[in-house]
Image (cartoon, rainbow, N blue to C red):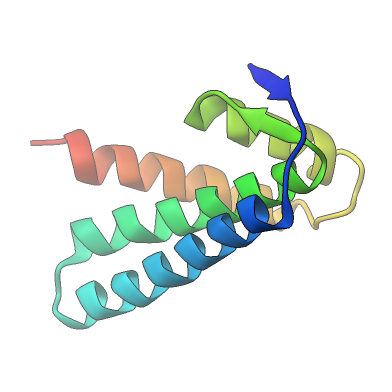
Amino acid sequence: MSKEFNVSKEDIQSCISSSKERIKSAKILFSAKQYRDAVSRAYYAFLDSANALLLARGILARSHRGAIRLFALHYIKTKVVDRKYMRYFNLLMEAREEADFAE
């Protein structure tokens, strides 16, 4: 599910930058009424943010579900992050899967 490794500040910053870019894209897409793509971008922004937090602890998730589980384990369960964000993450994941894979 994960791999521990040495991480640089640049690795973490890259995830944060990607998250910010995806949030901007989600806003643009939402304004253009491209809701399915906006949901997808919002989900990936959240995933990038979670990965930045995991990288800060030297953890690299191998999958989306792994990132969600590790985020819950290291940040929600330990009460570093409010559990409402886990609910948001799960809702976004479900919405993204529906938006990307539903016909």
